[in-house]
Amino acid sequence: MADVIFRNAVVIDGTGADRFEADVAIEGDRIVAVGGAVGSAPLEIDVAGQVLAPGFVDVHTHDDGALLRYPGMEFKLAQGCTSLVIGNCGFSGSPAVPGRREPSGLIGVDPTWDDLAGFRETVEAVGPAVNAMALVGHNTIRSLVMGEGERRAPSDTERAEMRSHVRRAMEQGACGFSTGLIYRPGRWSETDEIIELARESAAAGGIYATHMRNEGDRLLEAVDEAIHIGTSAGLPVQISHHKSAGRRNWGRIGASLAKVDAANASGADITLDVYPYTAGSGPMAHYFDLDAIDAELAENIRFASCPAFRHYEGRMAVDVAAERGVPVTQIIHEVLIAPQGDRTLCIQFIIDEADIEENLRHPQMMVGSDGIPDLKGQPHPRLFGTFPKVLGHYVRERALITLEDAVRRMTSLSCDRFGFSHRGRVALGQFADLVVFDPDVVLDTATYDEPKQEPVGIELVMVNGQVALRNGIHTRSAGGNGAGRMLSYRLP
Ligand code: ZN
Ligand code: CU
Image 1 (cartoon, rainbow, N blue to C red):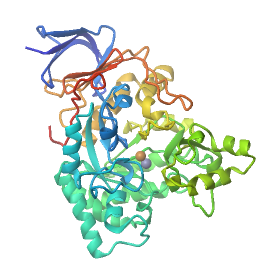
Image 2: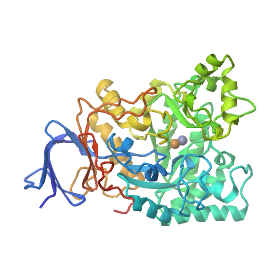
Image 3: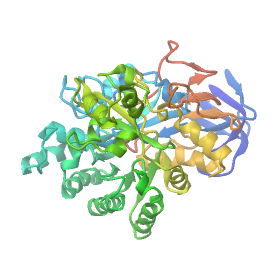
């Protein structure tokens, strides 16, 4: 007998197929019936008029540490997300040296583990509300083996050691290898170093996910490099948060996507993700050269987390500069050299709205928030709003893509790419990761001024057969158990 039945659901099954009406039955952690006679269950929920879809997968997160710091993961559940890919942009929670904090500040916890197996155990002990799949990050590995400040190529011994870290992570269930080639120390690596490490992922059937070396003036060269790495190492490539940054580069998304299409037509396997906002966000120290502060970028910076000057959080650097009567570049400089200045997270307005829409129309484009989970500051609203913004704004208001297609890019496309086995579809035998939402209401409410607001229209979220969110109540945060799991690549 089923444990839970959703009655009269409008099923959008995740494959891109048209919606249909059906009752859906859950037993344990699996879907046991979609349509037909489903019997009865102790918990029956009438969802007439609402969409029932596979839980959304946030393919681009920095939630490695958040799984431990905020195990209720309210900011993800509230968007309808049931699974995350962690370890993006070359920064991953493992490998690690116990007690030594990852230098980027993106992970934000002191590790007690040294590898993915240890990280998995720690996360599972906490019982987070959502599932997670891990990438192993190049910046993390390079810092561990060579230090954060080494601008040289690795020695043969160091190469071997870095390779063994990737291999070990893949053996322990990672889905692939990630880079962040604008960040330290990844930016000092040559292409051949990346190819060599990506081969270890390829050997395990894994993927390569990349925050490319350049997303502005040299975007197209960076796409060439990503394609070259994929082809040389022999593995699929995920281009992370695809964008053309900086006003003078706006409108070049089409040229970049054309390169991807051409490569795919000649046998490469490249997919992408995007966040639906015109601002990026990340560790500010990585974006500026202290000796030559980029004035155009400085003018477009807003402070998200600023431990050195908490009262700057939520403000544009130009406004702080005007108030103080000094150049904006001076404000950036002061923040960066202050104690904990390297812990500053900023929001940079660098993306064109038309480019976002062009990205969202591309058939291989997934959705990834790239949210940075520091709830102490004033984070980028994408942390709370990404998925409902796509559904409410880009689908309902802008009619850019169909609802079925949007759901596909948040579910089956993502699960197939990142190796989530038996997830991403409403079908018999799939895990019961589900979201129920009102297609006429769903919308983000998080703004740059009020970023920590949960979206509207997400009625219910189920993770592994357990109700995780219903009527605005987060089960785990209300004292229940988290049903999330650390997943392994292509294993159920
Ligand atoms: Zn990135
Ligand atoms: Cu990222």
